[in-house]
Image 1 (cartoon, protein in one colour):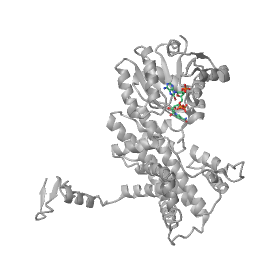
Image 2 (cartoon, rainbow, N blue to C red):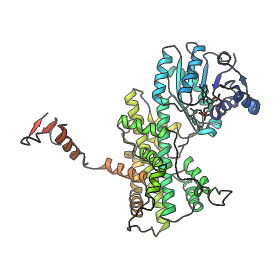
Image 3 (cartoon, rainbow, N blue to C red):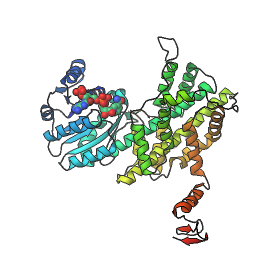
Length: 475
Ligand code: NBP
């Protein structure tokens, strides 16, 4: 046995990760349900490194040095369970099974528990960066038992993206922690993309810019504090001309966004945890709305009202949009990090949020310059209550606040939907409010359900006898 790592599941992600391991000098055992993919990989890229071709699971497992380390890169769900079962029956106590697919973190918790009982280590590892990242350096979020990271960590770190000498891979926490954090990462990605989409919509419909003009703006923004992978590719997508029609490609693409489900998972989990991730939720709903073809067809042409006036100063409004985008983005990340903390509390994971900011700086889809600021914020104060109160972000939002309001107001007057910009602003206003209408909600709940309320002037729980003499009793 000579392979340091085995990869099973050699579709695009698995092949690229296997090649990445091989290019870093590791001997890689290869396995796929249908051997054709294994052979194709060896035929096309066999010279890139040392690969061991195997056909059966038994052969595959036998090719590995102990403790055996196998990375599964198959379709999430039942396929993963099937592959785990096949592997586990051939492996021995102390061996490590890593699931690099997009598993739901509760599945990972279940799998880890069941394999632990059989003496095997199970590591649910979130991997971000798509095909390109898998080949050239992804961001890796491995969970599972800490001790497994001793032998696995150096291997994973060797293929991860590197920023300022630090690999974008660290042990996240026990059992499902890695996949949980990957899920929140994807949720933030949804919010980020929606915010960029809303900015694009404003340029198009409030300023009347064409795709090429908007591409230029995003290109410029990518040299400043908004610098990020998503802003960069936005400029690229907007510059693309469709060969067939000669139109900008974006104007030819059907405006109905699809989703694979990780954004939805993030919101479901946030609902259970009671964390307001309004930006992510609006992003998921905005995709659903875009795909509601019947309702959209029926509603097309409904009145917009007559209040809207287009901005007259395009330069000023462009800067307003940039600031609104930055402030909303800070809110989206603040909410995502709140969810990470809530998940950590719920599952006793003891996560260190600053680590997420560190390993998201490279390799992954949400990599961005401002993650350095988030990392610094958590370095300074690991128990940060919310990113938006940290001095740097507080100042950034205060610089943006008037622009942010102008953008949301203008969009509202013109009838341009900006659910993520607007809900992020409302979230900010909600958090900073001296007094919320929740007092009235509590009064109503006490009225119809005797749910009691607390008073501002003394401790305890109280109930008003609404259907009696309306005096107050202590509950
Ligand atoms: P797919 O998600 O398309 O899965 C294809 C692979 O799963 C093939 O190797 C296939 O084997 C294998 N497979 C299936 Br399907 N059912 C199986 C079963 N019952 N037993 C054994 N093998 C089975 O591949 P992918 O797009 O490379 O993604 C792999 C994982 O990585 C997924 O979980 C995905 O969510 C995750 N991921 C993807 C990206 C991305 O950008 N695409 C990014 C991050 C994570 P076969 O060749 O014999 O059919």
